[in-house]
Length: 388
Image 1 (cartoon, rainbow, N blue to C red):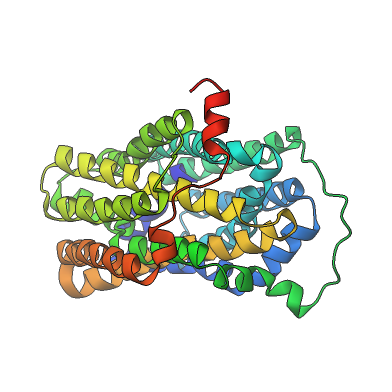
Image 2: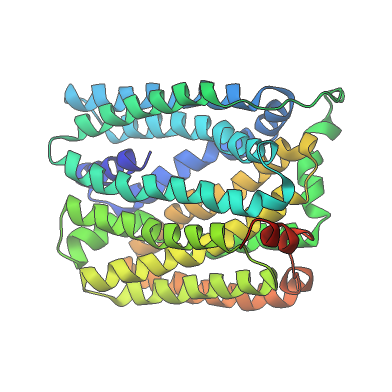
């Protein structure tokens, strides 16, 4: 996915020269997760989550193949890119919450936060290698980038065949409107989950600048596709260091306050990136954003999975994925829109300031999240029993 993101962003900017189109890519990819929200969660809770991932990862491979064929034939247009990105958005609307709901079935509850950190570190490795490889492969042609992505999507689908998912023997409840909306009601009734999920959504929506990286690479930092790959990889580099540390030393206390501090650090690092004209400083600032975001991700994902019954995890994870998508895809649209009005630097500065203000507001509005001490009551004992 990360190999392909570099090609899509660079090629769209080449075709249009308009930052608004970069933002629209995120919006088009995000829209299916909203439209399909209640369908995806219900399917994930009623069918083999492993099979759901395999089917929709294959759809991603098909969409990447379409991008490759369009590019190699010389007929690729912005509309063609939007169609492929929409198909990928549909697939990810199922794949992402299915993966989130699958993990708690594979590990003990007291080890879940460590498993989330370990799982995140492997994904961050791909996010480091992917953009860098995407930038290098792009030198050989964007069609080659899309072909590589298609093959890797298929490989990812095949590898899921080796995962063994323990299945619940509890009878499924009847399909109804109450069943469809249960995940949303559950989150609304839990102030800790509502605060954690909405904080991540609003902060990253305001503070994200992923869609503007092609502009920063070309127009501000005076670099090419290889520099864009470095910028895209930097947050993942910071995130993986943090994820490895959290996998070895899980958070034991004051997790709510630590989440708020981490999000504030994210906003501050974005301000540094906004005004930087040095590639090195920009990469370092983005690495700090990745490290800060990983703290937030591990806390949020652990809270969501630990406090949700297994039979409802698909529907709750689907809602959670929409919030994540809003912070990423709609955040890209917001960045592109404000960049069209204020310029790239003004857009990122505004987002960084907004993120810090949001942290202050959420600390006041969600005291249950601010005062949350532990992720899981038995976490300390579990950590000691494993020798840490």
